[in-house]
Image (cartoon, rainbow, N blue to C red; front, side, top):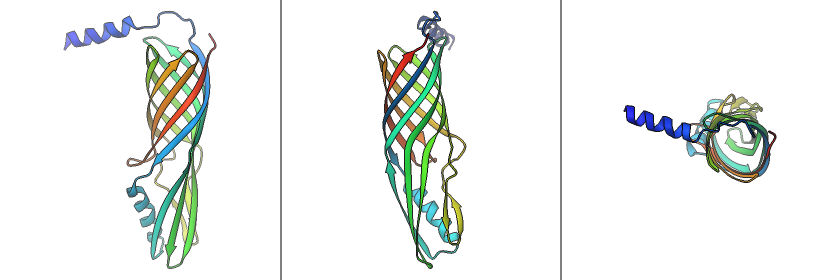
Length: 195
């Protein structure tokens, strides 16, 4: 156990960025997102609608896939970086058709907001973990009342991997919208080192 700990410690120290050069940077980029909405979440929306008094409900989803982000980061010792950014990862359109009474209800969930990430850099590669806070209130309005969509409004966890080549970076991120649904995003960014 002690040997493993010492080995990990020496690897971190060996790859540590001991200079203070190029510690602050800004970035921005665009890409696309792919949404994977689980049937469990659609069923939950349907059951919420029937609990309002509708006879039945059927929900479908569609997505706008254009994504973009911009922000700033700072490199810290042991090859870690902390980034803060504004991200717009597209939107999900929910369309529900109900019976008794018959209604067609739609809602748009914008997946955009402030994001904070911790990155572990190893050469041109980095892995990241972070959270994203949504800026929109997400609910469906009906003639019988309103229901919230099963999307956490406060914090969405996310994981990612990044590859940097000179001033360009390709980012893959998975954002967990609900415990059973997520989105995958690929963004190509330009990174400008300030100092």
